[in-house]
Image (cartoon, rainbow, N blue to C red; front, top):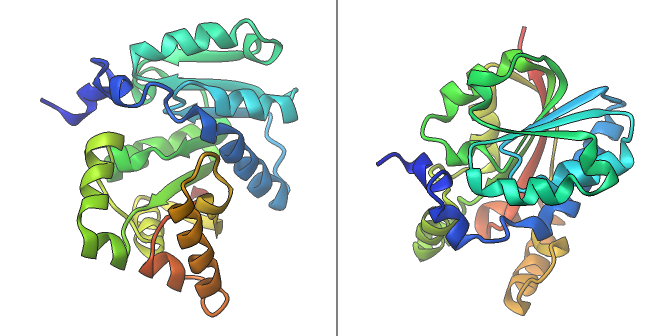
Length: 239
């Protein structure tokens, strides 16, 4: 059975019934920040693997004139999309069920792939096939791979089983994967989700503070040793 079937047959939804909707405002703010930092004002944005669609809803509130579209392969998400269609922002966003690379016929200003390619069996082919669909690309990539996660073993197994990550990255491995897939990196930054995400345990917050202290000496050292980071990347196709 292909690992992608969990997103179609409902098994992923059963383990993640809210599809991480609580993280959407933070992710949307990260996307906005890197676009503004690089003076990008897109007329069109598409999110591949849009999930419940909340990130696009939050982006629409700040970019009301930008055309937005979301794609996902999970039929269970339709209930969220119907809910969004009742809001002013949702009425102006198109949600599509299907394989983006097979059905999309539009070139967008910005393509979003947020917590996405670590879920697919062949990330290189997936990324290479995505390049022709937009002028710019924004990625959020979880950095699951750290000295702590390797030493403890269970964190990597748990995130594979529950969240569906098939590939694990450090910052350097993530950036290398993008460049090897034909992307040119414009900008990147750590997002420190363990300091700003909602509903975090005390242990997680303590580890986040320790990581921040380590980053005062070296920006990478906390992510490499303790983990719990994500990477925000703006890229375009290499020429």
